[in-house]
Length: 456
Image (cartoon, rainbow, N blue to C red; front, side, top):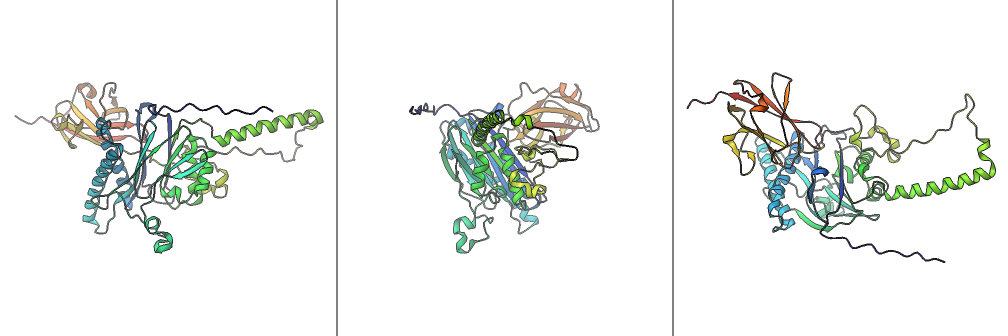
């Protein structure tokens, strides 16, 4: 008998970054608005440090969604500003400062809301992951969860900041699972939980809001991860969650580390299928089964081949077509999520003249609705890490637009010269700058009116 010998795997180089792929999906459910937001970098332009964020807004109406988006923008801006000190400053300290910045931004929203609504509660739950080489550092506040799947085992990397989690559902907190004991925004200061984890090739990390983890048990989640390709996993998790309970927004962000395109479970199924087909072929040849094969008679129902399971993410399907039902959701196919425009954070856009542009920080100090008739004109955005794909300038009263060259533009802002206005700035005319960012389904716009130069 020949004994199989296991070949030892080479020890990974701790300084060599792991390849990763990111994918996300979100659904509004039966809510009027999707107050979830998420961010992950464009793979083609990512550096050795990658940031992943999921936020779940609270506060009702537009406040919750805006709080989630602004919190993500503040975290990205703070992490970008501290990249120069990343070699001397610890990752937990950087994340702690970024969370503090996000809390300040949302807390200011809370204070403004209190002027109109004395009982307003504006804030969000937030989970941030920074992947640097083979280390994943997580900071979270609230009940956005982060899971790690490794070789079939699913582990929760975060602990909810909720009444039920802190006091126990058996101690009077039953039914209070979604009441947060800690969140971004309601108080002037907040302390995040921060943890550091070593990741390996084959790991899958899932960031998700309570619309996913409350509807999908961990055993089922582990099964879906094992039997779904990484590129389709986020959509499958959201689709399954909505099929089982669509009363809340549901968002999942998946980060797969150096994995093959096919899931382990799927390869096993393919292997077993090949073996079975070979056996059937041998039996068919020996018994003459092929000779007895015939087409169905007219009026006789033909055998229907089962439809292949759908692994397409929910947000990749056209809005006017039904989402294919998976095995888990056949009974409730009408509950499948519809596409949502919450693909990433819409950057905050500002426009200003050169006098109001902060060159050291690379951004406009404030937005100028009216700008004197002189150039250059600057357009900046926060977070500055948002990757601009296209920019166009046009008069508000015209559909004709000029495309701005982006070949040498610095990160986070755009400098508009005479050529971008056909060498003419007309007074008393309103111009519109349209910006298209990566990972955003719709473009952002900012407008300004040109006034005559002030008399000196």
